[in-house]
Amino acid sequence: MKKFHVLAVATWCLLAVTSASAQKIDTAAIHRAWMAYMTPGPEHDRLAKMNGDWSCEITFWKAPGTPPEKTTGTCSNSMVMGGRYQEGRVVSQMEGRSFEGLSTTAYDNSRKMFINTWIDNMGTGIMMLDGKWDPTISGIVYTGKYHDPISHKMMDIRQVYKFQDDNNYTLEAYRMMNGKEVKDMEVKFKRK
Image (tube, rainbow, N blue to C red; front, side, top):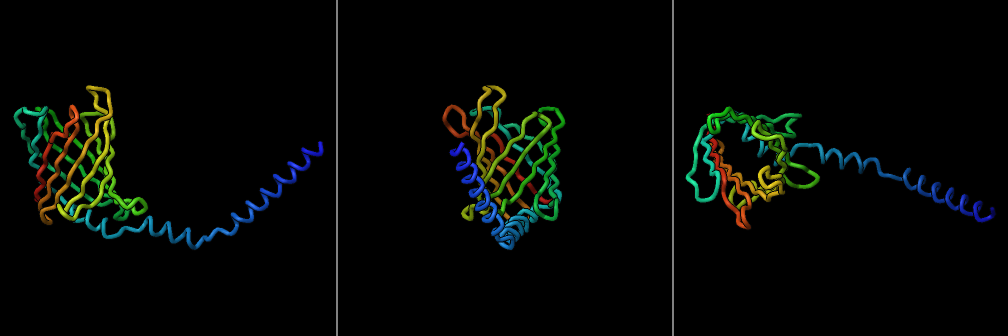
């Protein structure tokens, strides 16, 4: 019984010290950290330059060594939630079917990287990529994984956005196939 009382008193002392430490939290520092996290900055301005309506020339390859297939489409980008995120909507035709895609792009001030998600009407998954600005190409290089519905395995992917000027940019998409990276899509965006 005596051991129980000693243990109870020790636990109470530990809780009292922990509670006192919790009360010493610098709320001003917490506020500054949240403000830095939530405030759009230069990277968000960079995303906003892509706002507007774009025509798209889309080239894709079904497999390495196959002839490229081409189509056209449109893309509309807009900043949402106070300039914190960019939403992009793509409309096109793929193999005679109506194609719709939706991207959300952000710059995460805490992680110091760009984040991109993609969904479309030709799948039920969500693709998520993260990337960094590469000044040597004036663009963003994203990497990530997606679940391949054919092999039922996770596949490494890479996307490269290159910004030629305020009215033109490109997207190159790559995936790993048999241990080699292959280009499977290229999209040229031109401001309308």
